[in-house]
Amino acid sequence: MTTKVRARLLVASHRRFAAARCLSALALGVSLLSMTHCAGSSASSGAQTRGAGQSALARIAGSRWTWVEAECNDGALDLARLGFEREFTLDLREDEGSLLLTFDTELVTAGCSATSVWLARPAGDAELWQLEPQAVVSEPPDGECGARERDATLGTLRMSSDVFEIVTHRSSWCRGFDARFVYRRAPPRRLSPRDVVVRYVAHFNRGDASAVADLFVDSGALVEPFTRTDDGNYKRHEGRARVQDWYENAFRSAPWHALRLLSLSSGAETGHLIAQWEYMDPHLSEPLSGRNLFVVAGGEIYETEIQLVSDPKPQGEAAGPESAPGNPAAAQGG
Image (cartoon, rainbow, N blue to C red; front, top):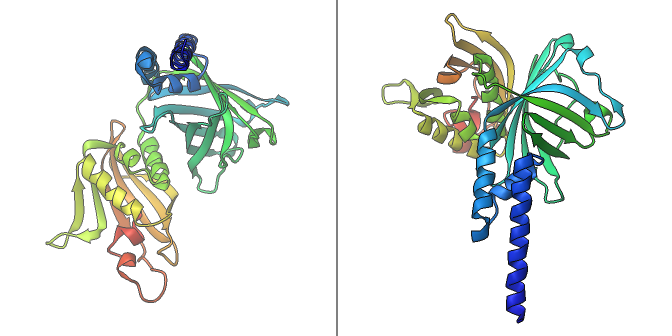
């Protein structure tokens, strides 16, 4: 037997083993990492496995899960006494193998609620994931709603039928020990107007123009004060694609940006909300104050209008074209 033949047999054997392992994992639902690796498996012999992996991932895309219990690896974690409630939705990312988890947490005893968005990527070591909290929006603005979960860490994600388990290493919930949170699958629900607006702020801070635009109905519109039309009116961007284009350009214009939600109130009509905020980026010498007027129905944004409450104050006395107030590069607030 030649070296090439032995090598081919070895590769084929490895692929058959990997396919069997992935199909077994999918049947048992034991590891999300197995599912993502299966969905991304390559070569002809992996076609069936890849299809099974993609099908399994498609079934959990947009799924909703509610918290049922938690514990630390050094003892109990009694969250019920704090009035702790949490649910999350799970979405797939276009980049292979990564997941987006959006957590909605409420701490009844503290009168606090928070929405945080985590990106989970396979860590390349056993079944570990890199878990990165990318944005958190709290109400009231300074509320933490429990332990501070803003640092990236390693952990594991495991799912079996209607149970989802997340273990995070060095958790602030457990004094630096590992924390295990268990969730149960829940029926899908339509986002409330408040949910939509808070997700808008979170994805804005992540600089994810696609995720922001996905909150709009197909024919949704954005009205922004940084561009004037020929007749002197504020520029109106019609349709989800144009809304996304505007945010992509705005996000590219500054190396970092931060939008802080100050308050959220209802307007005169149902589905109308007013979000007061402060915005900051490196082009500004002080935070810019403004608000968004939202029209939300059916869990989607039909229109949002950005209004400035204060004038943008660029860094330095001589503002160049990249810092001009009329350019969302320097002073876009929503």
